[in-house]
Image 1 (cartoon, rainbow over the protein chains, first blue to last red):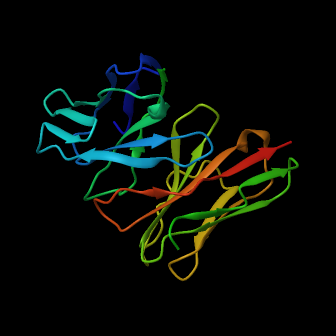
Image 2: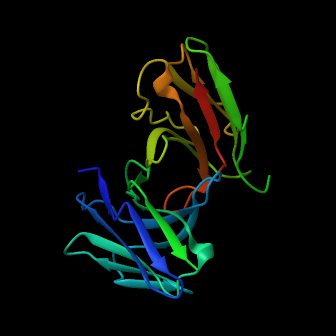
Length: 113
Length: 113
């Protein structure tokens, strides 16, 4: 119930294309869903986050789509660029209990120039 | 400081030795987390500190692992009698508290030989 399942494990996208990473969760108590971006040799960095009272959040080329009934959420990277090549982690967090963030296994994205 | 600082950045140790990993969180951040990232894997929660509350140690994999946070600031993760399976990147993160994203350090890469 504490797991967050992320797919795909790896993704290759052409420059200018759309990168889509999907996540699913079981615990309905999760109420904060951040995405992190990690470059080699660095720690993950918060990219964008959403709460379950909205179905979509957009920041620049990055969009989170959230389906509360299906307990699924996804990250869309529009106009993908080689500089977006990194590992992306979805995560889930329980605001009122636990406080620790549960991370998905990560998706390694490679954007071909 | 401007970010979360971890030291050392790399540590090679012999099996059976004890190691200490240090984390300096962002000033004013009340929450501090330790995660472990094995090669190509996701982030495994280890321990969480929030203010003066008792830490959440539920993720520590064995009694060889311990952590403390002195004065609500600097934290030290100690691994006693290191084993080869302890080899990983140990990431520290801090946050302002509930509902806030984490800021990660760049991690300590531990190699047990």
